Length: 204
Image (cartoon, rainbow, N blue to C red):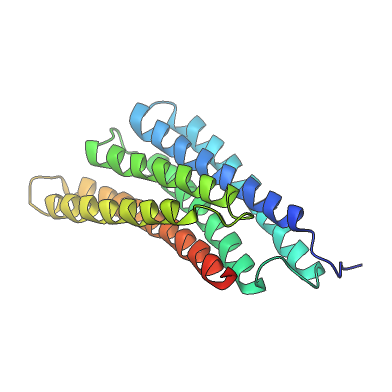
């Protein structure tokens, strides 16, 4: 049976669980990039986080389909759930490629980019936890936009360096993929901020 009445605590609890996994995934990738040891074990841990995030997202979609009246616009619930899941997927994909590509060492720029992702993860978790009350959300979303711009700048600079002729061609190919995915992960964090901003605007 579907529910005629909104169970706000269920939707917001599921969003919270998703956001926690986003933050844990971003933290795990940063630790992996910074320490650059036990890569296969760390990648497996991130795969587990990604699997748990998929389960929460699936549960959220099922609840959305069963509930007639929802606490937020249906498309906003879907956009936020999808955006949060995309961040975890992106983080796990980066970790798996560090192993798959046989990358031997990290780089300062990669560490800076994963550090940005950890800060995005923290901002996302805090914003989602404030979503039910719709309070003080702009500070979080503005910071995520700022961090995404910082990631863009770093990414442009490091890709330009990759093609300077000072690097082995295989390293160029490997790291171009990794840097591109790191930038994309930051973009997906910004997508989450955009989804939150859409919810706030519609609540006014």
